[in-house]
Length: 451
Ligand code: PLP
Image (cartoon, rainbow, N blue to C red; front, side, top):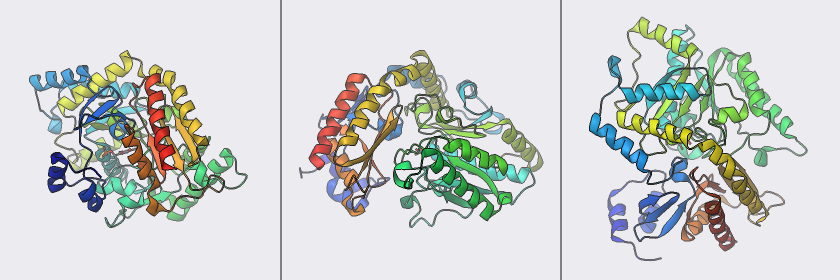
């Protein structure tokens, strides 16, 4: 191992890292990234990497976009901070709310601003509780999420998240938050089961959970259209149709977590459109500003809004909001981001290059280490297995996906290890066909070295 750089040593001395094996980090130190342009980022030694994960599933317009830089600078010059509390407002927030209402996949009524996906989903939980109190049904408060779903790390959003590492030793999930099965065909399909059969079995199991708990106690269901951090899990056909039929039977609201799928990732503006999902409420963040500023939003329908109005009339306020809810600089950058998506036809771009992405991705399904290669739009994953025929996984201790991610890094490509044996890809949406070719060449070299 090469000696640690001065920056790496200073990092080890001072920075407490999120989502990191803190013990191992003391030996390995960080990869210090210094600058970016287009789909490329560069470390402190000048080495170039393709950012195959768009940062953390978020830098859709890539790096060094001068229009976004200018939008931030211009807003800072005009008024660097004002807020939305107690009836104050500002034009970037109003404009952004209008833009989101116009494109949202629900029957959008109002937009509540936050700074992250976790804050969005925490807000969803609080709104659901507040609304059911307003509606005079204080026992209808439970929320059903899914194993392997990812919804954030604040106390409520981490409870919604269905990944063991987010619960273990944090004393989570909170009571009243339940997890139903993930719609993961590769891992959960039974012998001879069709997509439609699997979807029916999953919807039946959700219904059984609702009946066990008592439908009068279940308020909402939350899901990402395609699960991201849980391993890029694409549900079987008819899954959402069947799930929504179950929810409708028991008056259960649908919260659509579009934090990764939103703004073109799957080739549609929202994942909901790709799967025929008709949500009551929507969470967005990440690509809303292409990660040039931290901003997210909760977009509620008229029914939810009216219940909140009623309750705030009764008790005097809607007592929720963050200092940075609708931060004007973040809102101005998000407005510019949405303008660029429209002007540059980002959906057209995704749908133009996606076939090349999916062709190169699925070709890796023939690699001896790959049990399944799956993708949609510009997101994909490789399920790494010890035995292709039996789908046997590697021993989790071998951290096979993390090893492949480390080899990819040596080859000049950033990918992400998810769930121990999954390698995820989620490049900036601006990636060209040639760059997709280069990305898969580098990934193939890493896989060959891992054999
Ligand atoms: N929801 C989804 C689907 C996500 O993928 C994430 C983050 O990856 C979150 C919520 C949480 O967002 P944040 O990390 O901005 O709090």
